[in-house]
Every structure is written in structure tokens, then in C-alpha cells.
View: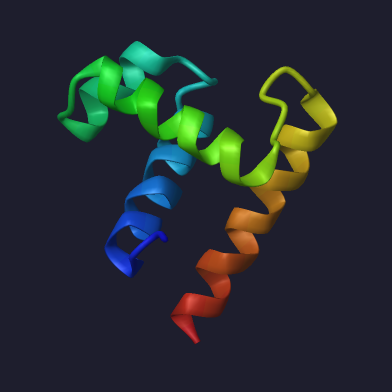
Length: 75
């Protein structure tokens, strides 16, 4: 079971990963965590969602979804 704080960490990690053009090391630097932590979180996201990080269309859909989530949080 994923807690709310864990869910937020996974979303934050995914957002940063996409902002850093899917670069794990750069994402880790910007999140101030070890790169293995980012790798672990991305593996967890993949396990939960079956997301394919190599599929450009899927990643675009994820980015759009994250933007929608951001907009909804502001309202």
C-alpha cells in the first residue's frame, strides 16, 4: 500500500525525471537524493503503472496528465 506522502514523492520524482529529459542522474541532483533512490522510485512507478519510459507517445501523455493534475491542485 502506498501512503499519500509516498505517492507525492513518486509524482515529484516522475515530474522531475520528465523535466530533466529522462536523465536519472540530473533528476537526483535536483531532488537532492541519491541516483539509486530515483531509480528505485522510477521502478516502483513502472511496477504500479506498467509505464514504458521508452515510448515517446506514452511519456507525452504522462506529461499532459501531470499538467492537468497541477492545474487541478491550484483550483
